[in-house]
Image 1 (cartoon, rainbow, N blue to C red):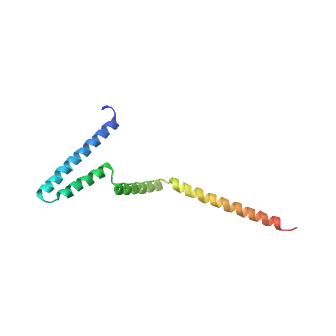
Image 2 (image 1 turned 90 degrees about the vertical axis):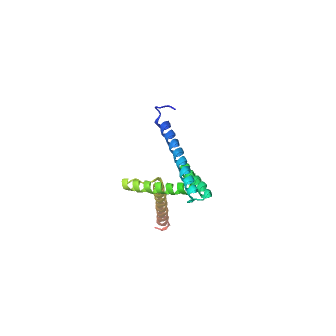
Image 3 (image 1 turned 180 degrees about the horizontal axis):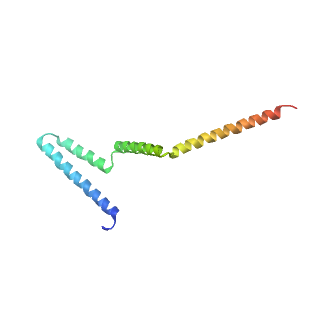
Length: 118
């Protein structure tokens, strides 16, 4: 490990923290099993679920987090006065439709003008 590389240090600290959490969680659940507060099967399931969440293996949690981040970004951009890409795309589509309507109206108006005999 390069002591000058903060990314490596952060990664190793994160791994160490996750390992400590897992060890502590196992210790606590074993204590609960010993005291009869928790069934051994439930303890194993609890440890697996918490570790899956820590690893990011929980799709429901990931989806909820993504929705929350999207809402936060939307609010931030709205507060700053910036538009999201989808909003720009919607506006471009509306402009294209309006331009097409204007061309059709001009064409209809010009065809009416040429249909009138002198």
